[in-house]
Length: 394
Image 1 (cartoon, one colour):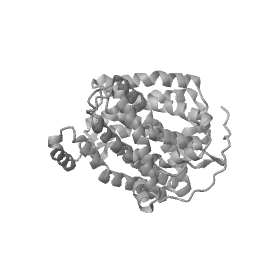
Image 2: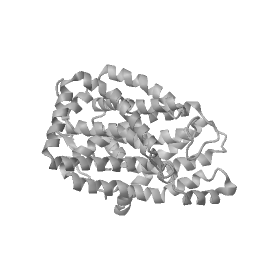
Image 3: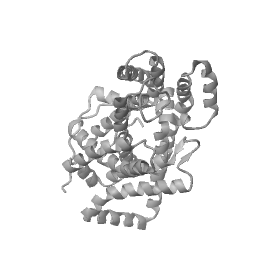
Image 4: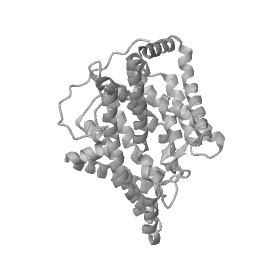
């Protein structure tokens, strides 16, 4: 997880490194805002709700993780090509699975404790009950690691089969060529992707596997993000597709900015029509916002600096630890009488440096780095300044 993005045609893609780190850090204001959300219950609910902070959470939720999974899919294929399916898959099991187990067993119980402190008289009783019950509280914000493990396993399996079935590789290449020659079909992929997700979620519901283990595994969410992960994989498989995807398109930007508030307004609503529309729009908005953010990042944030390198290196640690500080911050300020916005700003302002401090401690220990980052820290090497990559015409 902590490796930098690989090079493409001699260029180090700093903009993807930095965009990925930004999306991880964005989890801090997102999860803090959830504590004040009008619509979405969270681990700890603040004493007062805030419509403004609720909207902040809803807006960022429309694109944050989908864009992250596009980048993850791109990264996955680049590393798979270098290492081969089985060695890469074993490496993913180690690098993703070890932090998942470590944080799940060591940090998530602390979040359960904070969630049990709303009633001081029954805190220990409630905490023990949560510890004894399987469910979403054991996974919390770690669900993305579980989904990444599933996507990487699927990708490694497809790559392994493709290496042994030349006919399958040829058929895939022909399908890609056909897609390139038919522009209208490319435009139809967005609504088709949304329709696929809706159909898949309906099928999961009919067979009773949308949610498993008391919501510890939300299969519907995994299916929803699968298309954006595969998009990232396709962009790495076909570099000319990446070049076109990175070329800013005003129509795509306008459509993305129009659909984001629509999705924000309907998500987390209970009516069946709203839920179906949410599943339909989620991958569409994710793909459009990936285009917006990746094209913008490539243009304006493709230079590395000591500060950005440090933020990139610390992004996983920050994501793994930030919720612990947030939930206890919410509990500490619950009786403060401060306005919700003031509490939000205080919690975010305290969480960022605390997480960075934790990362500084972890990076000094090979054992802690292995447990929480899935790899021991490497010696830093100088990296030459990147050169803008050539963009394919079309």
